[in-house]
Length: 570
Ligand SMILES: Cc1ncc(C[n+]2csc(CCOP(=O)(O)OP(=O)(O)O)c2C)c(N)n1
Ligand SMILES: [Mg+2]
Image (cartoon, rainbow, N blue to C red; front, side):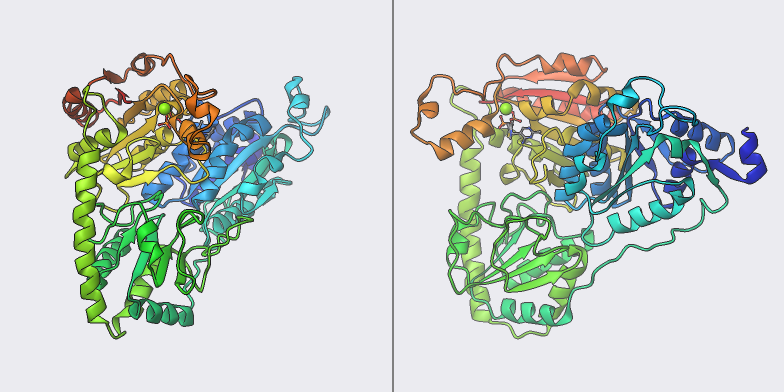
């Protein structure tokens, strides 16, 4: 027991941060500690000894993994997240995760220590040379562009108020990460403890859609002849997901999942036209863009000059991004889970153009049948029995059918060939593309929902970006039985594809070995996984995949052990 605390009813600021996070609803703090952490660790122990209710601090041995886990935890739970890192060096390792979180409107309170500013004569002052080496003129600059708000804790009495504000801003529409830096001397000081468990002093703002814009959008959509819906970040929550599916069917609305990062509609829904918007956009008279950063490819997907475009989502103009000039005739701002049902409701009273709806239904039936034929044909293994991403995706979808599961894909099994039917059953890496995301995101999701099957599927390059040894250590230490599917082509195939896309007949495309794309020889990833007690298997031939998938699923669900399949693809 600390005498100072007993006499004054106060607590070390380092511990007070945790106590306040608990009051804000944070269950876990994804933490990577350092030499600025003594007051945090001492404060935690102090608070624990006094029976103060705290979130569980988790040791996460790489910052990118900590950020990915908080991201994945939020995707499944919708609950507020907190990540605590070490000074500038820990923060810079977490910066890619902050960019990913910002791109996907993932709210989290990101914190990192600040090296002591005093060199002597004050408790908490600098000791080892690292304290000089880690000082920066503007530490926050490392993540400022990715956060909605930032500040530095100046005095210990600010802990509760600042965290309340950070939480409210992070969780306001449009949501996103915020950053608070924590100087060591301030963390060492005492702060009043009596108000730390009080309810939050500030509520997040939830923006409601503008009524007039809703009516206008409903009118435009109801009278459309050839509408197209493009959805990238889902259809909101489970309820609005279901309402969206019924609505699309009722009005025969083609729904396209161009570069979707969340599932908006079942992949086998009669209105789902796949991931290519080109042919539908070319003749669209109305386009509804549901929370999509880049809803189409302007150079490849022309849209008619007189087509009306409606954008719907937490920030329909994506104002964080300097350049994004997709036409926007009507903007409906708000959380998708609110706006989509409101739009559906506003459509109810509109007159229906039944002739156009029937024509659309016939066209959709033909398009779905053609899509199904294309997908089946392209999901075959090669003549030599080798696997492709499409084949693996098709088999993974079949293996997971009927099971409550979420797939986190990062250049892994493509959505086009994967059977997915439920809200939250599919996530792809954010459009910021900070690779190394899916393995930790799946672990965060598993922590949030222990009974769900959480699958991370990724390229071999993406697996290496995830700091696999650290991630496997986490999976073993926290007993997170995730299934990892590495789709291993021994290269950065996406980089190769980008080069041949821009220079189809160029020198690089004709070279025997394209520069800067090879990852050969591939490590035996099974051994990396086995080092942390995972069940692991390498699969080279198409005929062996089904059995390997089923055994891996048995291991994660029955043995509750994490598993890795190193799937060799062409
Ligand atoms: C942190 C980070 N570094 C580099 C890149 C650039 N990059 C984009 S795709 C890619 C290759 C991914 O390779 P892999 O995961 O093996 O997938 P493949 O395309 O081979 O299927 C790279 C390196 C990135 N997006 N993020
Ligand atoms: Mg690869």
